[in-house]
Length: 145
Length: 315
Image 1: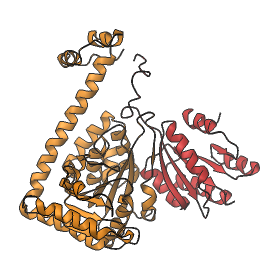
Image 2: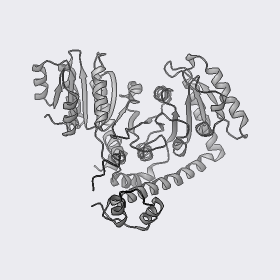
Image 3: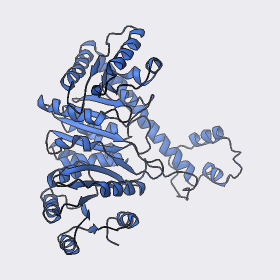
Image 4: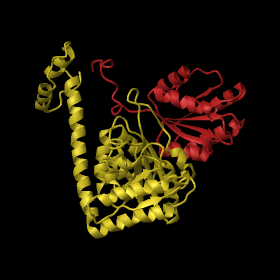
């Protein structure tokens, strides 16, 4: 199809949209980061379903399935990431939904991030991550750069 | 198992997938909805509409609670706007209904409007049919925050609830045509803010000026966040449903709806077809692209496009 981008806005009703569920899991009220990321993903053309604060892994997985998302982005600043994120992966397995990619962000030490990646988390974005690198990650089909 | 089989056997994933196909305007979705057609027509369809920030999602959450307490299952379709520039969206209605996430009797789906006007998404109708076939007793459809003339909800639901809040306009606002005319039930939410009684009187006065009709839309007061007035609101909605059934209005509405749906389907195909002709390697498409002085006549071009029947294919 000829390039018409300059004269015609993208037809938002045409293309297959990527959908991402973002959530804060556990007892953790630090939602500024997840909101900024949600907004950035929106601007990158993603449909972001923001599930909000104090979600349990069970709620996150159920919502992800109902919303039929491509990926789940969890944000944690509470230190409970080694409990809650593996539980999300486990539940996705139980529900035969391992095609849903999981990525995370927040305050997660490098050793823990490495351990989480070993068990199936595709990427962990720590403090100082540029929004562009998160957008690139999404645009590359949720693959690490 | 096929998607239809999965959906009919209660598989949440199959339902969710099917809605995505409809959202992506995949031809499979059309076939699926057609296949499931015999299983539809049982659900009670309730629309929630109103301006942004009037509390539609919170009200939906509170209504879901009441409906569940009365042993019925619910499907919620919550539409939020998509960006006209990127197509992206932040769908934030679900956040108000978090407590129902793990209830198997509740299915919540967020939808981006994806360029569709009128307060809904193009796939909202399909999603309703799919939830209906899935066996939900009640389907709540929440529109995007609307203005005065996004009235499409009235063409897809049995009962339209218009959500208002105190201090949302004077007497001139209430005699205007449009959104106020499609309400079957009014609810003034956020009554705790004060000024609700004045708003109620304004609506009541405006209604009194209208022609006498068999159904007089009741005006309810509620505070969704405090879960006050929700039971009576649901009773009022059921009252309208009962009225529709007794008066024969339900059959009439559904027939009207069928017509609207056919029109919408034809219009969507025609729009796609027009884009394909204009973007494709056609005489009219080339003329449009090569034109530099803006002197083309849109009426003549439209006639030419309408004359090009059959797929011309994109280049």
